[in-house]
Length: 466
Image (tube, rainbow, N blue to C red; front, top):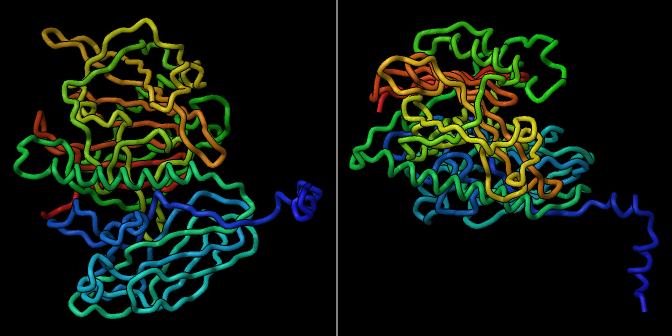
């Protein structure tokens, strides 16, 4: 016999049942902050970047790096975009809870302001000066939720250090949007993978390894301005229109010391886009330097999921604040930074470029990312081996999204300068140019500029000093 309550629920109109808000767990796989503590001895430790406040591990923490007690500093977490959200419950582990001594030694937030974005709804809270979890709840008119920001208003002073810390924050949103635990699990797994990558990066840069790396341990980012994009490039028309918009936005910036404008690569990319890559031939790509590129502060290899959720980067030219990181090609191998360490071999079984871009090959239905490649060869030089002037890659595979399993496709264009250094990296909605310091096998990537078709420009530069 059907129970009365169940019968009532089934008789309710579907729209009424679908409009009921309920709470679910969210995970942040991106986090930004006004500052974070960094110096030469801890640059690869698991302790201080803002994302460590979202890893569920009290042994790690976000520690601000402003050089004072931390008042006015903030940390922002990016969550799954949820429509119809009316409340957010937070669980906070205040201070650095790796140990009792470290908790007391470092400063802890006392009064904080919690802001929901994009609604801007803000509420003040006072945190207790105690270890363990503390719960906060903030409401907003039913609407979109994308991020949450915690701003420090006052602090509990540390007994030894002025550095302020937050170990962990958890998020539980009340929303009418359907829950997708698999997508949230994937976001959390990306955080754990990022932690492992940073441990691996520490090993790469130890002096005992002895192997030269063409990248530096850390780079700085700065928002440097915006440039208008021609209106005709803003309209949707084909698979490459957004690439063209980003390329033209990059081309509008002049070169500068350490970061010359890659005019040769810009012209090559412009011609390739105009002809839909007519002179690119299908290839298999290998490299003689297959070492993985380390996950660095502010510079990391691209991931397939960013084509769905967007690049993990933002800039605010009014303040110069920048979050996220510049991206390198998804190959993620050291050898792809130099043309001379890239080998290409003709293949006959590549799908057409149109089919690859549409995700039609059977490989695109796999959980494993598969990459198809096309190359434009550089003019032959007597006595030197043939090399690629540019590579077009199309990667595809299945990813978890808010709507369930999705087939994702990511196209990237890599272009090399006359000396064989990667100086242009083009994706659907962003163009990045790179500058190099030094020459030959000892050159290192030292500068970069990323321009999005609709976003502010972000400038990357090497960190001076240790």
